[in-house]
Image (cartoon, rainbow, N blue to C red; front, side, top):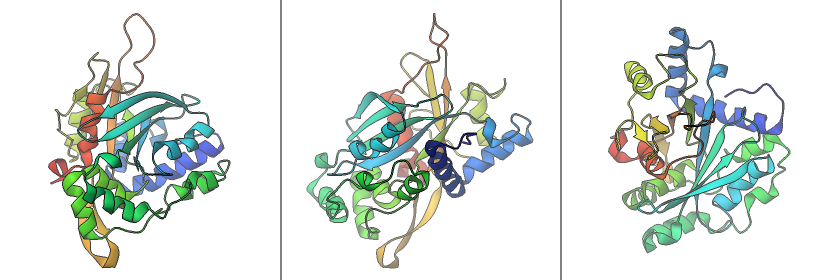
Length: 290
């Protein structure tokens, strides 16, 4: 994800991606292998379909806070999605220019969790009494980039993390990982023949030793058949909790998207699909990473 202009948006998206790729080995493994096989010449040739973030639905945080960053820089709020079983809401945002990725923001509906899980989350977030985005200079790429990697609450204890993990693996992921980039997405259909269909691309990814999320099948397909998505399983990171407790937990992952042209038009299928996204979320779940 590289941009040729020097805009604020380009600055913080590039910083975000550079930090993310250092934490997710699969990013550079895939890029290097594509270069080695003469599919692309550099990372810049990969089109980023979208980036995704996870948030907590508590006062002063959540989507209504986070989206301000992208709306300020010309993104437009599009469709909303609801995930009943996972207790999540989400929106996607259309970029101001095709050179930028779509944005997918999701939010945990904290009020629908058990009293125990709500109490744990509020223990870490109750001190936040103003919207932290409101204090940012949104014309400063450096300030936004710093914010997206600055903890807004204390490290959780291992016990609190594991208690959340039982009820909501999404909640556990956010309480530790905060606003870190959850995933970036390789746009598959613009790649050369032999790599521009998910069946072939998935075989390529598995051939370099990367595991795929198989929840709902390795390829998740929209009802209209025009959006197909796959994802790697999140890499494991050695988490250090409050008081020094440690354990391996799920980090971030890489997604792949194949969009087809809408019949009767010259436009590619846009937006997302609830059923696809529901299973993509599980790239960080215990059922996939164990």
